[in-house]
Image 1: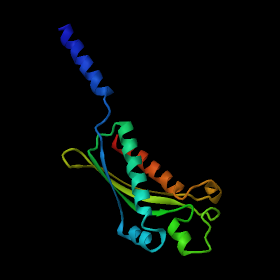
Image 2: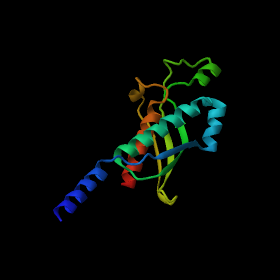
Image 3: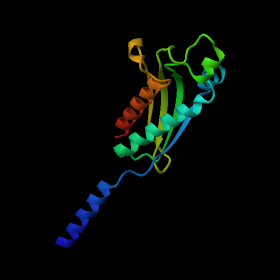
Image 4: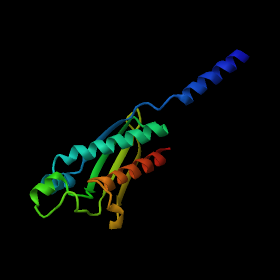
Length: 159
């Protein structure tokens, strides 16, 4: 009996020590935001933003052991802190280094379990409100902050 109890305890410890299964994260942009990318921000920024969001959600979910099989996140809006390459190219008055603005993003997400059942949703947006906080910012600093906050809140909600 002692051996069975010891074996069961060891097995439970192994399961608790194992990291959560890798979560599949699919990032999209809304049609409205895609128009902004096409018309002003620049299409090449799509990949920059979706990769940043995908990596952040995956990282937070795995580190917290969230048992979601698949997460679909959509960037509804994002504003850069500094002009993008496309904006600097099309608007000569902008300076890639000295022009700064308030940035941020709005993201929605849906998480699914292994059976494909929806286990949670979140709609979150954050935009910087004080220009003095953006002095040392890169192009997407505030959007990345919004992605981080979104990921943490979504993980908290699913815990």
